[in-house]
Image 1 (cartoon, rainbow, N blue to C red):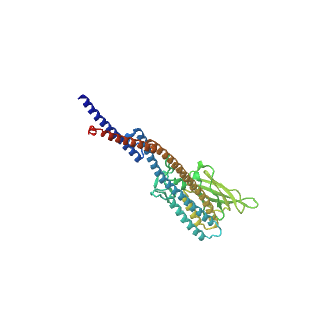
Image 2: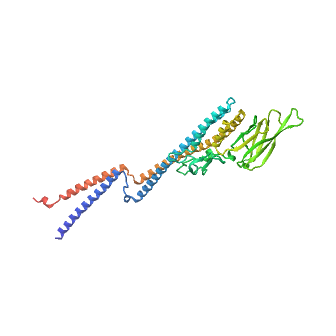
Image 3: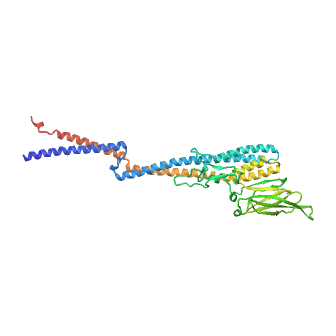
Length: 415
């Protein structure tokens, strides 16, 4: 009786073990099939917690890189547009300069110079509009560190005639970004100490006198004041042959400055050269002085001030002398303004080059992160297929073996 009982228990245990092995092989085969269809070795975190954590960190970094790249693309679009606008400004300034040179021709009448000034006014309006241009998001392209929706305001009744309505300076980029805007203050505004851009215009009485451009002698003494120069006496020098005279000019600083008299060298009846100095600056008067000569020296606050003064002086010139003076001053100051614009345009080009470098580095980082993720969770397909085939073969053998065991019954041998 005991022997039969043990036999029955052994048979049942054998059957249970066989079923349990078949179920285990079926589960393993199903897991391998899931790995093959997904292409991943780690389908869920429980498969390999360490590899799952590595893959998750890599995916997070890849997502962050993609976000930074989208932001960088938007920044590149804005700087590209700003650089293009500065190119349009340069073209307009070059045309303005050509008209200025043309206005200096002695064959033009006052009416013709006024016609040229009208075309120059159109170019000035175009440049002012370009300086306040916005990007596709409605943000100013030249807002510097932050400004109102219209960075440049003017002309204003009080000095300065134009102002930058914001915080000057170029915003800094990061390791993965560049600024959204350029420094409009550096591109279009001028400073007396750095640029020495002054408009020297002739007043009444200047039939033959010409004034040179301003030279900086000591930038530390420049305070941004304007000056007026007037001839207070023309006196003959006794006992000279041929007869000569001396001219005395006073230089008045505005506002509420001091008056400094300057006596020029003796000159014959043709012309003379008189150097004049003010705090930190100097200029030279050339020609035949006459009583009543006046010269006004006003610092230019911006490139727009330069253009406005050129239009006013050329359009209002009543003689070739005053027209020549206006042209020489305008050309000098336009060149200063174009240097400013070109410098900021070069800065825009460097920012675009920097964006290309950032984009290349980010792509390399993304490839590296993708490789880390792949090593952590992706399946080696060759090994996966081999394991699946081996597991499938073992499963089939187990099923066939179990089927054969099931057929082993005493009744099959009773005849």
